Length: 222
Image (cartoon, rainbow, N blue to C red; front, side):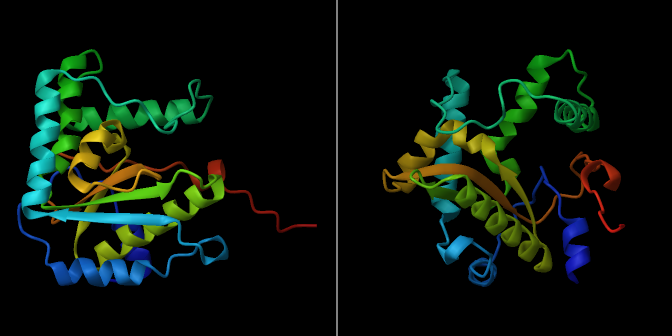
């Protein structure tokens, strides 16, 4: 698979089979992903990979919280601006329409949307998951470095025939994740990432992208 195919075939998959992901594949991907760029090469990410019994335990604990109606954990960072302006507001709304439309869930059925969203904490059935942390003393440029690292991981997973789904949703249950992983106190959970083989029978939307002229300006004339 060449780089262009890896980029254009990568998407947030929300339906996985239970086929195990070999440990050697995950090690190969993460060893190569270590070459992702970072300012002054500080490599501010810290990744934890869960499979087998530890992942099952995390899913169990998260499921129990959902069933009990527990509130989300106090946020450790702001996921979205409190007042999102155009065109980002419209893009986010369009995402919801496409995502839940593919599942046959109308906008007004809030309960059904919440049930669909709860699949996040089962990792959409994936047999492997990565949890990415960053030291809470780091700044915005280092958070950008983490994003480049995660994109590198996802593209390498595609090269291995695997799919993924990055999930900031796990940050809402960061205390539950910490119960299983016991990360150092100075780390903040940025996101989880479900990893596995796609369940091609699952109803899932391929979310489109803005046209080039909305996001890119070529300044090539005098």
